[in-house]
Image (tube, rainbow, N blue to C red; front, side, top):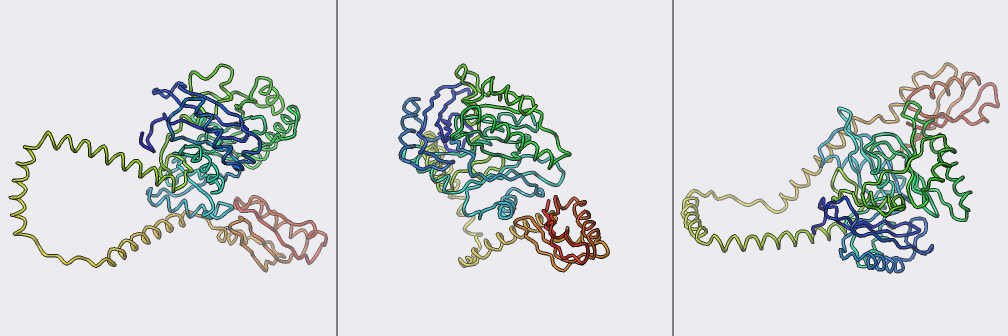
Amino acid sequence: MFPFTKSRNYPSLIISEEKIQVIQLDNSGKKVSQLAEERLSPETIVRGTVKDASRLAESLKKLFGAANIQERLVVVGIPENKCYTKVFDLPKLKIDELGEAVSWEADTYLPVESEKVHMDWKIISEEEKDTIRVLLIAVPKEIIEGYTAALQEGGLTPVAYETTALSLIRLIEKQKIRALIIEIQSQHATLTLSKGKAIEASSIVAFSGEDEGKGLKHLIQTVNEMLTYYEEKRKGDEKVKSIYICGEGATDTVRNQIAQGTNRDVKFVPIPIENMPEGKDQSFAVIASLAKKDIQAPKDEDTINLLPPAIQQGLDRIRSRRVNKLLLTISTGVTTSTTVASLIALIALKSMNASLESEKLELSPLPPEAGTAITETQRLNLAANTIVKVGTSRVFPQRRIANTLGSIPEGVSVVRITLDEKGKKIQISGRARTRAELLKFKDNLEGTQDFSKAILPLSSLQQSENIDFIITLNIN
């Protein structure tokens, strides 16, 4: 089997802090062929990080032996811990330019340097005439590499990595509604707020040390806080009317308690595979979704694959060798069956070559450095073109604050503006003649669509006149 094909017959492997699961579908891609589960000791994986790679490798060997799966190339789902997710808009660009643009934007949006993460992106919509919406996922390299080391020690090679949130939203993305999906396990729950293919927020709720009743109350409280925050922040957007649940803790009792505690409609997620074990289909919901993943290399713009480049390159070499071997076999057969035709073609080619020789022009070869210069010039032109296209579509904070400061009330003087573009904040320092004029200035700032909040310390309002102030603005 070639790596990075659309075949869905790769074994799919879910690794969480509590357990590992493996599934392989039949040739139709609709039914289970093999399915197995293995519990993990608590110290094997802690908060999404592999702490004992050898122990995890032994569990993987045991799991694949129990499932009687011989295939060594696997699709891997990993916990959501420490995952960075961002949805943003870009102008419509050519695909080769789009990759450059996403890398440029990632340096702005990610809270860590892009060199410290494995990241990938995909186009999730092209609804606007001149823009596209992109979903970016990034996971710290040490997290991915910890799983890779354990897999390789267990005799397995990953062809794709996916986070739990991506698997969860695939279960309901065709409904194109804003919804909250919750996977409930014994020690934690993963919450994912989504609309269509877009992940708007995700969170982990730990149950460690809590009894079942207290853990569920904690989960319901977190759900209510999450929904309240996002619905207050986006008052004009569609409300979350439905909550979907899955996982080993997704029972009728739990569903009813969440519905009562949140005053929302709570449903079990739809399962995309027909013959899951009776009574345990929700426990295997995430891995069932992972088994339906379209497997493509990380460079594909329609899928997300967090596979490290070194693994991808190794798989590409495997594919190249197999393709070359196949072509050699085909070529040998064709050559054997067309010997006479080849001899006739050879005579004709010799005649044509003699004719061309008489007309051949002598050209001086270019020096090696000329080819290098041409290649570098083309690369710089492409990068410059991408920056111009993306840059013209962005609204920079400097322009926003310049527009806003044009309406400073009389009696307010601004002496300094400090911009933190990475933190998406602006600080304005100055002096106000009266408290009323200062409050008016604050209201003017909050009344624009450029800023979500203007923070003014209470200490600035203790004086009634000649007030030195600092206002902090959060940039939308």
